[in-house]
Image: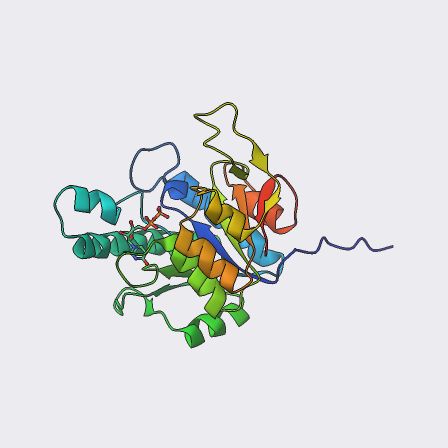
Length: 242
Ligand code: UDP
């Protein structure tokens, strides 16, 4: 008798990894063991047969709003933030290649000597060849976040879900680290998430996912194996569903 291998919930996903998810216990920059652990998780996700597009953030290096607070014009500060996402993407590409997982960085901000410029066609071609693609530069425009970039790429690449990796096991009514009365949602709609002003993603990201019928799965990446587990529907997560 043969045992069937478990079937993932989705065939093609965007995994949103914030800069913070790559920072590990540090307060800034890249924590090499954490980047390697995330790469291992992404490889395991690809080995489930899931086509994986990773959208990386840059908050571990720079956020536009912080720069603007220090007097840098917002659009310029956001350009610096987008560059930060490229640093994370290149680190992740290296970590994936090191463990034998083919990967390609595609950047919304063209930097051809470092990585391929993003195009939908190139992204789809890599995905069908089972390469993990790492999408840098967010949307390529200031005044947006990489969460919105994740929803945008999920829509244009016909992804089945956005897997939003965080440090908590789902969406809570308030920050569970600050408010002991915070309650956890098992499932909620995009409209509820927007109406409750839940901080887990910005409104533009929720609205874009809602308008394109894309579920968002919010889960914790603190444990090794969290990404393939979430793809198999194991472990705790909040499902934001139409
Ligand atoms: N950013 C931008 N346009 C985008 C995506 C990101 O200008 O489409 C800039 C913005 O300044 C942002 C920074 O890049 O603060 C880093 O992205 P984000 O804050 O989303 O990173 P994360 O919080 O996920 O680490």
